[in-house]
Length: 305
Image 1 (cartoon, one colour):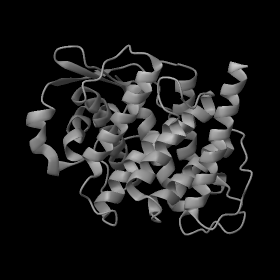
Image 2 (image 1 turned 90 degrees about the vertical axis):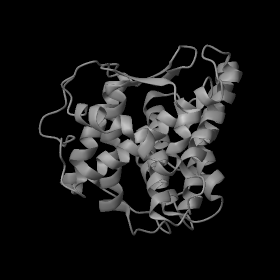
Image 3 (image 1 turned 120 degrees about the horizontal axis):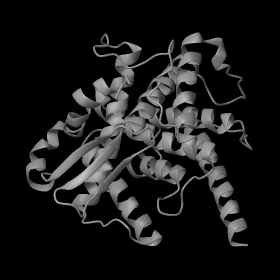
């Protein structure tokens, strides 16, 4: 593996499953003590488990972690440098190309997304664009991307571990698969978030990492043409369900970030929001997800017809 993501995978990723919720490490000895974490060098997205094997196996691909890191960097920079502090009470034009740092990060994310969509396998991190560093400076952009990427990956690992804890099986029919995926989403989020005050920096960091993961899967669906609904729940619904479960109607910074990032990919994929003015980010995010639901249901109706 030549990718610069190898440093993060080999050094930090294995411990992320513990570090994301250190207060629960004691439970690993009783409920999560029999699994192997296996890395594969392929670029195609892979976060999956094989619960029927002994010990159980969780596979993670190089390309999945690359994509997560690129998204972490691009989303963080886009929000902090171009969105943070803005209001939603009037239409606003935002030009990512006006900021070279944001522009380069979005170019890098486009490279990572295109590699997934085209099913490329090249180990060819683009020269001249940001990349993971072996020892990034504290609070540097690369360091922040590392941290956010690791939280997101840790949540996905806990999602796979939840399949194991809950006794799920692979190769089941679509209806049961949907049910298992929803249960694993909830179990993993509860492992990471339960007992943490929603106002604490710890909760914000963990929730941002989880939200980031669902934002990315939704973005991939926007570009790739499938938002889920067969073996996995609709990606936008997984995002909104998570936020509603843990935050309800409470205003929270993660909702504003979720809307800003999702709207970026929504527009980049050629879509336009029917409504452009909102009282706040919560209403904006709800409107965007509702519009995606309408699109998905219309598409499914066409297939059935």
